Image (cartoon, rainbow, N blue to C red; front, side, top):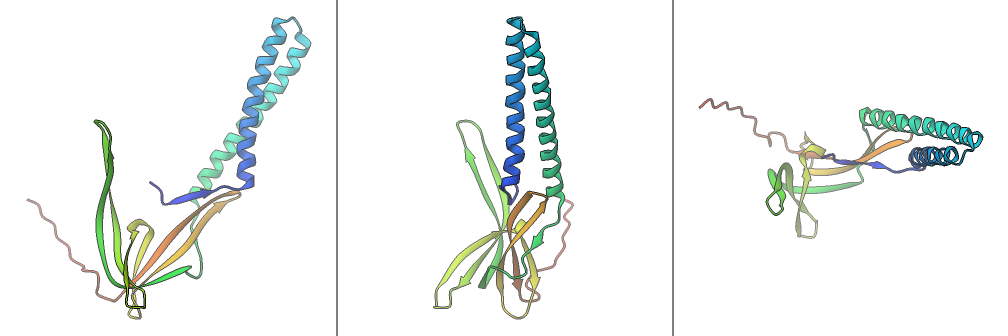
Length: 185
């Protein structure tokens, strides 16, 4: 499951509209030319077939451009905002595997995701709990203040644009326990 969404814009709308309109015109053109052939009007049927082929070409070009655009924008590099749009001062942090899922009649699924859970100091003596997905966070050592910074990031190619939120977590040096253990039992 991805942690980003594609932004919908007018050029992407025009690309999708070209695909849909091309497909509709191609199908209706072939249907109209079939009716012209049945009614013995071959001159009109030739025009309908020509319009159908042009519509197919427009549809195929739109599909190819959509595929190339989605591929190129997916491979683009994320651009991160220079300043965070939110900062939370934290007093405690832990990592946790959270399991969630859904059970249907006889089938279902379970997902397990790593999250960073933390307590936020509100400044007025209150505290609240929050969590961020580990796949959208990067942990840094910082002896200044422990905090979580929230950033917008985006990547795009031409009119294909993806937007997402990422986090930078700053913790005191030595907070991550670095130990290795291989158990070959």
